[in-house]
Amino acid sequence: MQINELSALELSTAIREGAVSVREATEDALARAHADTLGAFTHLCDERALAQADELQVRLGQEGFEPGPLFGVPCPIKDLTQVADLPLEGGSQVLRGNVAGSDDGVVIRLRDAGTVMIGKTATPEFGLPCYTEPEGRTPASTPFDPRRGAGGSSGGAAAAVASHVVAIAHGSDGGGSIRIPAAACGLVGLKPSRGRVSKGPLTVDGPGLTSDGVLTRTVRDTAAALDVLAPGWPGDPPNPEGTFLAAADQNVQRLRIGVLVEPVIADDAPVHPGALAAVDRTVAILQELGHEIDEAPRPFAAGAWDAFAAIWAVGSLGAPVPEGAEDQLRPLTRWLRERGRTFSGQQHAQALIAAQQVTRQTAELWDPFDIILTPTLAQPPALHGSLRNDADPAEDFAAQTRFTPWTSIYNLTGRPAISLPVHQEAVDGIQLPFGAMLGARMHEDALLIAVSAKIEEAYR
Image 1: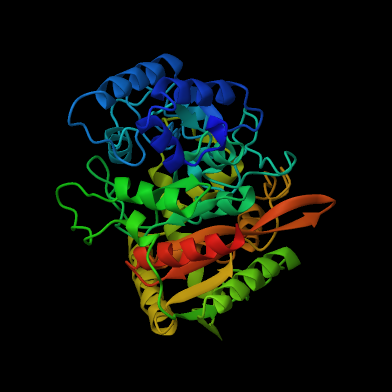
Image 2: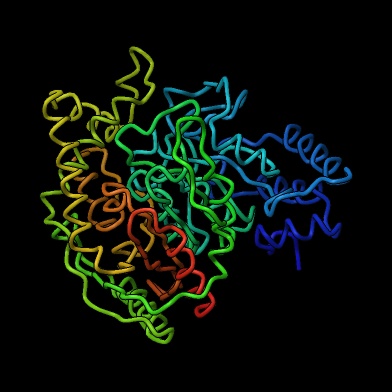
């Protein structure tokens, strides 16, 4: 089997056993990254990556050294995250040429685990939309149909993994930004529970909408990465005992599964038959595994989601826009920032309170279920430009909510959720992926991984 066909865990095993060197794995990934035509990367750092690979190979030969399960595996970083001395442009023209001065905590964790940082992956401007069409760059595309987007905002990461440039790529999720690309590219994408992956030591959680994670092709790779990313920094709560990778191999007792296919955050969102088929296939697998299936209630009316929209708009004001560069931003970004400025401090505080109330209401309605199952997206991967509307940014934002009428529930409430590539269906004569999304109670990431691993065994 070729290097790029291996999962992250399989590649690391091959490296530890001497079948592949870290340099060989890194050179393979870099060669494929340079040949990328899907808009996956914004910057590649060959010399730095190869030097790191050589250092890791030396370490592997040292007596007593015990490599972790992702040792030697190439893993690029999303270009919203700081990597010291590398570009940090956030998908925006106004930051072109900006260079990070330090490493974010997740970068340190991935480096300490022995992954090789080969470069930065594409993201839309400041990660705000759910499509990755950065100005002046090739839009990130799904390899299933390059006319269609890889999703966003971790679209570059998803394109890199789905096209087998790498087996794993860092991403982040503030409204579905790991799970949306996972669904669009036929991958596994987990948004962990709020606080599971620390924002430390350089940054803070803020309203807690965003979590770091990875895009992978297998549940076990995702679980191994969560083990790497979950250890906190001073001031963070301790993680539970045991590993998430071990959870992927655990048996699961009979669970109560709640199924919801009605759109939540957008009343007028049409749902494609392929999205419903993904849920149906997952239901069939879960029934075969012996789980109880019930209908889940809609957790809140669409109007209650306005709290998320308000927090998102105010949050866009935190983007590091240089003075005098506001008019160079994308229309959607400008619209969000202008909208954010309309909220008073009191209104923002009320939005945060409303979000907490929605969180409690959702828990009251959904906690009787062990798992909630929905489609990940309402539609197949979107054609480039079909969601973007520079002439009417408000409609652009509304179109995104119709495309993703379930994902941001989990950012608003902090609950963990994962997209699984359970189904493919022909659309306009081309087979396209459709994801099913499973969510769990707060902090029950291990259960979510265990269930997902069993589903994966059935659909592969």
